[in-house]
Image 1 (cartoon, helix red, strand yellow):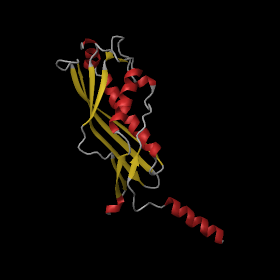
Image 2 (tube, rainbow, N blue to C red):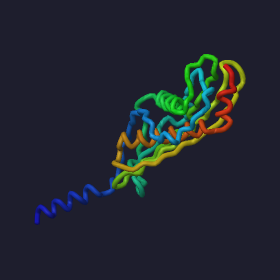
Image 3 (cartoon, rainbow, N blue to C red):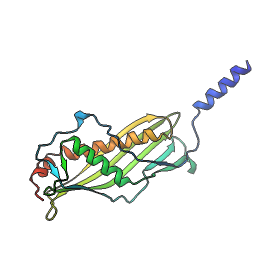
Image 4 (cartoon, rainbow, N blue to C red):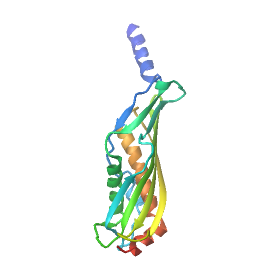
Length: 200
């Protein structure tokens, strides 16, 4: 009987909703999450001299963790990146370009400037956690000198579910959102045309 009572208490404790959350710092590590079929195949003439990434966010935190239904100050905590967000985006953008058949390193080709405008995450901590990620990128394609050949903006979002405070879940959510934002840029008809016509 005593064992049954202790077991019941243990189960209830494991399933109980937390009342507080702690700040979390996430190491961003890029890994492709989108399927091969989601990436467009650009023309063989598609080439870039380089990719430049600028982090223009006013809010440098990635987002927040919160306990649903709780309003106390310690029921909300910030989520930050423990490494360079710009480098993470650069790695993801270049990986997507290569998957789409774009050659990088051609000196006579245009430059693709990618500006990070927004990154937001929200982790809803309940028995397990629901994760949401959202990324907004702006792209500008231009020759080494001269006017822009194309510019546009794209957003990518993703959702995930799993253990609370999971670094892996954060990485998967953000990587998938990044993939989707870059894929939207690469599937823009104007951009696909400009990348071949914009001389260096």
